[in-house]
Image (cartoon, rainbow, N blue to C red):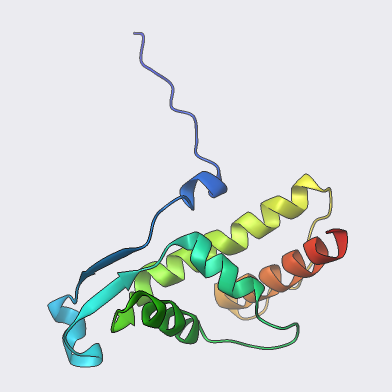
Amino acid sequence: LGMAVRKKKTTREKMAHAAELIDMPALWEKRYGQGKMLIPAPLDLETLVKKIPRGRVTALRALGDELAQAAGAVASCPITSGIFLKLVAIAAEEDLAEVEVLPKFEHRGGIKARIGIALTLAYDELATRG
C-alpha cells in the first residue's frame, strides 16, 4: 500500500538531543526545591562519563548535579539521566563493535552493573585504540 518504511535510528542518532531547562515539576519540588530542572543532553552525560578515572565509581546523581550546576538548574532529571546513561553505554558497545572488539563481562547485579561494566570496557578499549 505504499507505506513508507521507517529506518531504525542508531543509538548515536537517539543521543542527538539538546539539553533543556524546564520548570521544576511539582512531583520533584519536595525533593529538590523550586527552580529549574535540567533535562540533560546525552552527549554532555557521555562527556562526563569519559572523564571518570578508571576504577572509580561515580553515582549518576553526582553526574546530574554537575550538569545541573553548569546549566544553572537546581537539579537534573533523574529519570532522563538514567535513560540517557543507558544510551551512552549502548553507544559505547556499538563503537566497540565497529572496531571489532566486543566487551565481555559477567552478568551479576542487573542492568546497573552491566552499564557500569560496559562503559568501563568500552571507554578503556577506545582509549587504547585512540
